[in-house]
Image (tube, rainbow, N blue to C red; front, side, top):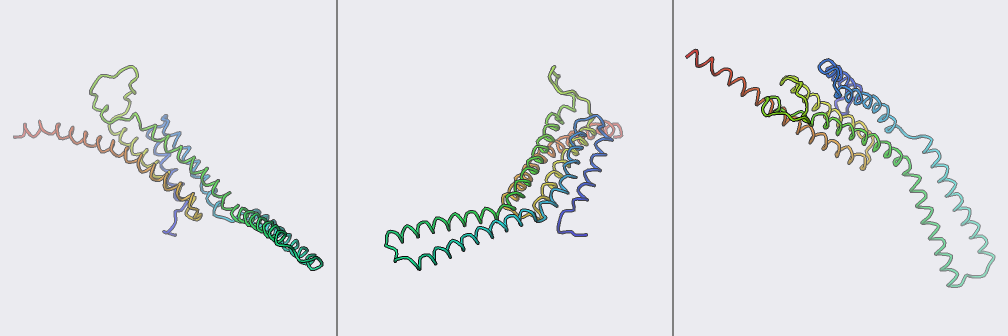
Length: 250
């Protein structure tokens, strides 16, 4: 077992276990559906990341063939011009400048074409990786939307609800588990994104993954702040309930 790279199979197993936990605790919740989608994306990421890490043989062969044809054509053209020039009079200064200018333009055009073909494989892989990372970014925002109205202060029952207030259907324990599931899903989302760049060291793709991980960390931090507040309420309630018992014992 390698401890230097993320194992996509282990990530999928983790998401599968988390999905079962969410279903068992909240079988009819929208969070279960989001976790199911995250599981599907994780399974697809295993194949996508492997494909991105593998060479695109067809693209390499096509690029190599075109580059060979371009260079062969350039050499052939130069050879013809060189031999035809032996049978002609010496070029004037103006004609020489025109020939050099045309040759320089051809060299620049050939160089740009060769560069385009050489980097074609990387750009194709980058496009695929960025598209997959964007999908994960959308999932992260959806997870954040599901925890948005889960306010721990409302579990105390203080204040009067309005017609538009979210319904209070969870106990303090259930709310704690719900928020914890959201935090786990956000963390896993960042790990799935990292699969795409652990064998594909493209600066644009790595930057996109880093931005996504910063996003999921920031969103998870908000969730954990709610969990801390909820636990603080629970500890205060426990201490308040214990005070009469201590007074009676004294």
